[in-house]
Image (cartoon, rainbow, N blue to C red; front, side, top):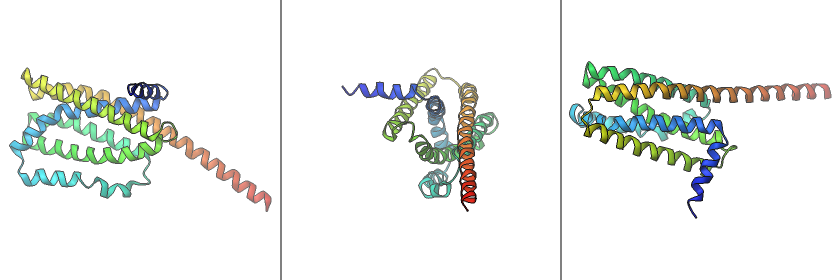
Length: 218
């Protein structure tokens, strides 16, 4: 039965702490964005001209064009940038109490950068994880988590709107959840950084040993 494939993905998840951290981060960040996205869409139509909406869409569409520029970037640096973006996003929630137009522009700018970063990180993470899990299984797991988070976020937004929960209250709740997400992101960043630095240390030692052997042979 096809249902067994879900069990296989769950089994893969249980075998890797690094994979678990990725799944938690992916779920939390996607869920938060999809709770707030309907509100931002409404604000877009209220405060932004079509030109600016199109401009943000245009910038977001450049992710495939600029990815080769980041081919050699260390994966942990991508996740450090993700952390910075999420911290800025949490802080930007305060702008909704001051100036809704500025808040709309700020949050859309963050969302656009996050969308580009998401695609860049996806490619690097897939390449990084290929030795631990089959690429097909990894991509299916990511898609599954993203879909669950999107559905959960959309349903949550509908419930909040049904009970007329104020945007400020919603943003406060998302801010708390966002702080927790940043904490998990930092753990993932530290994990990637530690793995890569250890690998680089081993490679450097191997190079030194090889040079010593060559020198000795001469």
